[in-house]
Image (cartoon, rainbow, N blue to C red):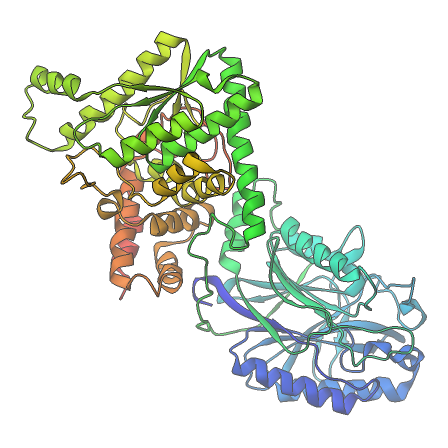
Amino acid sequence: MKHGFIKTATVSPELRVADTVYNAEKIIEAIHAANDENVSLLVFPELCVTGYTCADLFLHRPLLDAAKKAVDAIVKATEGIEMLIFIGAPIRHNNKVYDTAIAIYDGSIRGIVPKKNLANYGESYEARQFSVFEGDKYSMFFDVDEESSVPFTTNIVFAAPNAPEFTVACEIGEDLMVPESPSVSHAKAGANIIVNLAASAEIVGRAAKRRLAVTSASAKLVCAYLYANAGCEESTTDGVFSGHSMIAYNGKLLSEKKPFETGMQTAIIDVQTLADERMKKNTYPAQDTEDYFHAYFDMPLKETETPKYPKRPFIPTDKNEFEERAESIINIQAYALKKRIAHSRAKTAVIGISGGLDSTLALLIAARAMDLLGRDRKDIISVTMPCFGTTQRTKSNAVLLAEALGTTVRTVDIKRAVSVHFEDIGHDENNHDVTFENAQARERTQVIMDIANQTGGLVVGTGDLSEVALGWSTYNGDHMSMYGVNADVPKTLVRYLVAHFANGMEGEAKACLLDILDTPVSPELLPAKDGEITQKTEDIVGPYDLHDFFLYYTIRKGYTPSKLFRVATCAFADEFDGETILKWMTKFYSRFFTQQFKRSCVPDGPKVGSVALSPRGDWKMPSDAMATAWMNELDEIQI
């Protein structure tokens, strides 16, 4: 459970209807198998001790007595097993029979949760055998034996004091499907994990409805939701059960046993991040535990394997999902620019083009915006400004693409102007320091700003989110524009969006885009050598794959440096060693803190995703904040 990672599982074991001895044996086998997998939380289906489909047999003493003996055997078999386990069984209590979930830990029952909402429609007739639980508070207790009793109520949060975010509450089957699900109050009482012991018969279309209900509940409640469903060994007298089970996490499906698939499924969930997500949302209520009983279990902090994270968190791995996402992002950018051009009554959109990825995306977005406005693309002025570091390859690509898109192309060679400027300030042109670089960047910005004034236009900024995060821009140079259309698009995503455009093009435009995609990322501010780029951004600040990974999990998820290092070394194990990752992590934190002053005065730009750094919206940070706490934690990392 270090860093909040907890391994969870659901399983629909083999069973025989009303054969509690056999069922207990299979449940115990599954418990041992889960323990071998280092699982900390295991959930079984509704009434799995007897089978859900026992019907009127639930009202007969032999079955109820047999169920109690089976539960006792299961509890005894868990001695020494440090795992929170939920099994389903009928319980006779106060002359009524309840459909319950029994929470077990290390040889003892920690609480019993009765079903609150009985399904009594369609193929279900639970109210015929079971009673509705009507208690609200934890005043009801169940006598396990002559010496001890446990809470018997829907309002229980099971908690591990040494892992404060490991908090679990339970609902059963139909409880999920009612307008006021118990899980809502469970989450408000502090449960980060909701488990559901279910028995939902399979009919056409129901699997999709279940999936939607589970993922939606996890998203709305900002929780992990484990749904364990009865399997196909249930009675088939009037229907069939499929074992369709899921583990969802804050709106995402982590694992799914699709209908009629068998076996145990596992998923590692991050309860620490769930708690942090709730903390960030001011609309999420403060914990209300007044009517709740807390059942504690002293689970040691288990070391789990690290979940496998995608290397590019901003880019969906599913191709169809990415195509849909790409069009959504492009539309957000294009419609935002359309609105700004129309509102400012701009006669032109002026873009400094370099043949690089960022200016290429900005140009493509501008073309779509002009199309949306019903205006001629000639109103886009594409300005190429060669200087000391410009290569023929990038210059050619910039001009060819701008022409292929039908824009107006202007070339302004800035070498003479920059050289005169060096003379004016007394700078040696052979000294290729930061002054040498930034003078070119500022001259380029001056040129396009003045052309915008000259043509009644608006300067479209090209800098991306990764550059904003790292401060990889010249203050009052490429840092400045009249509208930063790429401001919320990270570098890794820029590349994929340009590729998306290329897939829909033909001829010269497509050839240009493909060559641009193959060109190293560079500001081209240092002289070329033999016509080749000498200044490669990723050699200086580090790989953008790493930086975008760091950015997402630092800003969006709030990971600490040690946790970030752990997941990064796992995600990039085939590409970078720990020493390299730590090196660039240190660079990331250092630049992120020291470059905030640039973010404090960035131009307007459209938000497109869940990570944004605009000082007017998502990110407010003092420019003189210190990175000491983050750097100290980095220093403690052992490689």
